[in-house]
Length: 139
Length: 387
Image 1: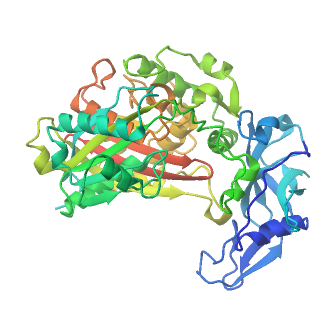
Image 2 (image 1 turned 60 degrees about the horizontal axis):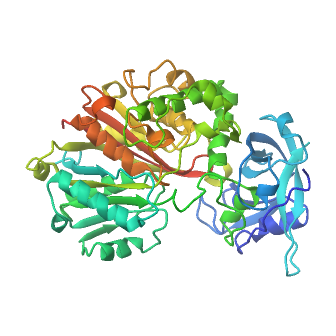
Image 3 (image 1 turned 90 degrees about the horizontal axis):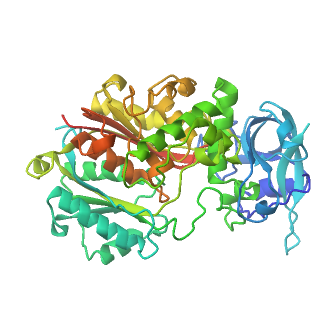
């Protein structure tokens, strides 16, 4: 299942830090240098103080399964050909919960609270930008 | 004068169709408008405010609809917050009427979701050229999957069982068996639900709403004007809206939008949960009903599983929910909210024959729109026969 394929994500200038970080094999989060808020999904302003004093930092890539569902029906490619697969929220060590997939494990073996680490699937692009989709596998 | 009790629903109509390959959305809306205006004893010429949302209306869709109906309303509202849009429409209409900006509001819905073969629960997503959608689409997030994420967490945290969720589907099917217009009327058992195929764990096929065509209309006006109309007015006593989303990564999946909108609606109405005779709860999936009842405060968070068991939410129980059979069994043409308002009004008028909640005077109506565990809207109405 680690060969799990994803549709290509589309980045804006607000979100490219996340996707380009994934292209380097890193989970990249945002932090406000004014108030310290760590936020996800990425955006141009800190939602707490509405400043643009945002920096990106490399997170540990470790987390736990907050909740998950084994998906048995989805008519849309490429998922229709990869059933069943695991949709999950992973709670990162740095706090934010991210919507993702858990791969590289028998879905029946997974449990809420289980430790996971980031795993990156590079997605083909017709320019030379390197981006990847971050997903997780058991630690 | 306070808004609570000042505005009434004067007319309602649920289109009987569940399969309409020969109709358009706007046609279903227009047919429904005629039904609701007839019910209210009004004509299209009385309408000066138009509210609608649908599965395919675009950003300016409300203008297209006004043209289709050849209306020039003084008040337009095409708010689309998903299946709960129509609760917001009724509340917005009430505020506008109360402020003197319009007098007779027409709220419309029409859909051919089934005959257009829209795969609403499991077919959307895939590659999206959209930076915001790219945080869910690459992971195969389906509508049902977003609700399943909540169901799984609820089961793990509180011990809620699939049998308890199935009880909700069984109850809705029983109610539908008493509704001649319902699409699915053959009774089912808990075992039937558990034996149906898994769509997204822990939700089975029969934990999921059906997909139908359909539509409906609601006419809102001042309580004062409604008193001169043929049907007994049903008063808007309380309303509230809310959203729940990912909160920059801190979302609490157990707390739904119903917490905020319900609290506001109950406070405005000045009523307690014990006063409520029936609930209309958006039942896109069984977990939606359970989570909504908890967040509206009908039971403690975590106790929803036992609360929905033992017949409590069935006709004849302490808190009947969705006597029409709901989206799980009666109809669900994509955005179901308007039917909850229509059924509540008919129940409060005592027009529901075999599925009538005896002596119903006060209803709590709540809609959930969108994807429960990812981003959703909520809107609550408290409707009653007395101010």
